[in-house]
Amino acid sequence: MANSPDSAKVTPLRPRRPCPECGKPSSRADYPFCSPRCKDVDLNRWLSGSYAIPVTEADENLDEDEQ
Ligand SMILES: [Zn+2]
Image 1 (spheres, rainbow, N blue to C red):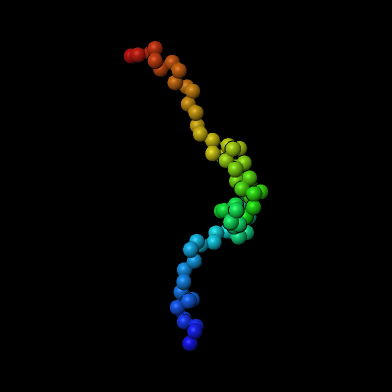
Image 2 (image 1 turned 90 degrees about the vertical axis):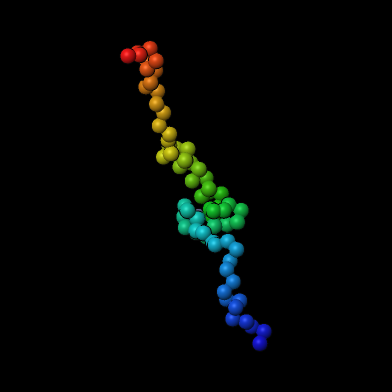
């Protein structure tokens, strides 16, 4: 009686997430990605403008025109 059925109930410390880029199991070193490459792909997506912040440069002459 060394095997207790309770051992099946143990919850993992950290749920394993698939890599957001390719869906492979993530690696510890590059969490939550599976490899440095996927990490890079994600970073590039950020930098390449899908996350562009709209800049408003059109309010230059709002100051003088006071009416
Ligand atoms: Zn990946």
